[in-house]
Image 1: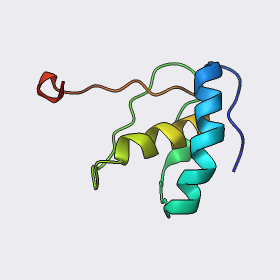
Image 2: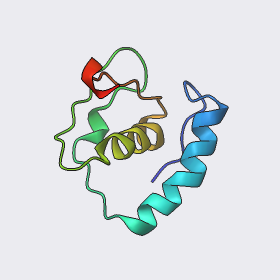
Image 3: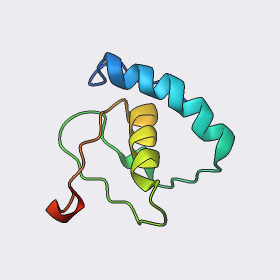
Image 4: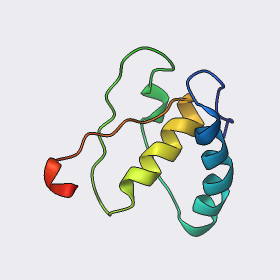
Length: 80
């Protein structure tokens, strides 16, 4: 697995990936097919099939680790 690129990830994201990433991999077996199609720059939409409440964290980690990009989430107003 490659390390996050410096491109779009700010310091908080890099620290979060470095701290949460190893713990996440220790606790969970994660499968994310198709991550090679995430563009490293420019616009892109990544859609996850929600299997658990932790999908957002998994998606953000995979996106940061494999594409070096921050994840911005859309959510319904009812969740806030």
